[in-house]
Amino acid sequence: MSKRVIVISYTSRDVQIIDATSNTVTATFTAPVTQTVTFGGIICMVCAVIVNPLNDQAILSTAQGYLIMDTTAGTFTPLAPSFPAENFALNPLNSSAPYIFSPAYGQNEIQILNLASNTVSSNATLGLLNPNTVALDLLTNFGVSAVAGSATQSLLNFSELQNTPPMWTASNTLVQITGGCSAPPAALPMLAIGVPVGTQKGSNDVLFSAQPSGSCVAVEELPTSTFFGPPDISSIAYGYGAMPPTPDGVAFSNASDPNSIATFTSVSDNKLYGLLVDANDNWIAKINLVTTEGLIADPFSQTLPSGVNIGLSALTLTAPVIYLPTTQ
Image 1 (cartoon, rainbow, N blue to C red):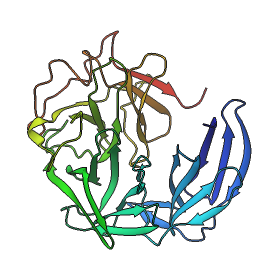
Image 2 (image 1 turned 45 degrees about the vertical axis):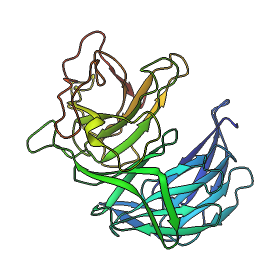
Image 3 (image 1 turned 90 degrees about the vertical axis):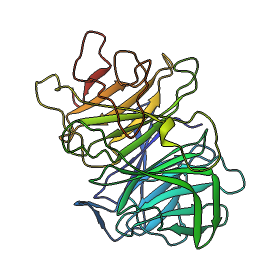
Image 4 (image 1 turned 180 degrees about the vertical axis):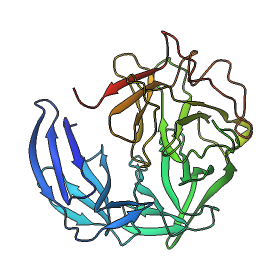
């Protein structure tokens, strides 16, 4: 796998390639995009990117649909016509039909782009109004989509995905998050799924979400293996809490963009972390998602409908939150 970073900017058609070993820009390629699209006040030309780890190609979500970019030659290949998306997920592990999981914001539907057949299917029956963010757990085929400015989630069992264009279906459960950091409950639509490795927290998978333009964050402990039928929310543990102030004493506020959240498993300690970028782009919050002091506490007995306050703001020297400045 190449040690490269793919960089995009909402207001530009350019895609830059950074050599991560030398920290230098090695190439700039211009995507064939001439239009813009607006998502909740955010205007973009190239709106999101994911690198397919199986072939090192970059998949771009643009104002004019999806493009596949050869990161070496800099060539662009359009996929079948689809709605733009500001956030999407990729399943490259389905050997017969790798696919893109794409929220069609403004269209009240979710699209599946089959990369093998280059076809698009839609589903507008999930009960989501203007879905704008999605996440996938590739180990369990658990999918989730959520709505901007709402605490509504659609939980999906993609092990039972049936995709016959122009329609796709999968067992699903619609849930309204009822626990939050303020009253009424804070909406938590930005989503990222993390999968711990090694012995840390066993094999539990975690959904990490954040309140756009607010300080609330939440986690859900998801199924640890594939399952049958719609997801059972009674088996999903849920916790939430408010972010502490940043080191300069300013109240932390999440960005409004679903691309400003991520999860990763550290190669140094095998622990699962969540990342958030604050609304002013001054700080990156690194949050230990698997710790008895923080988000995931043992025992963690509350279930999704009720929730439990995880007390994230009650920090100690072993606090799970580390703030990293974006500039030195």
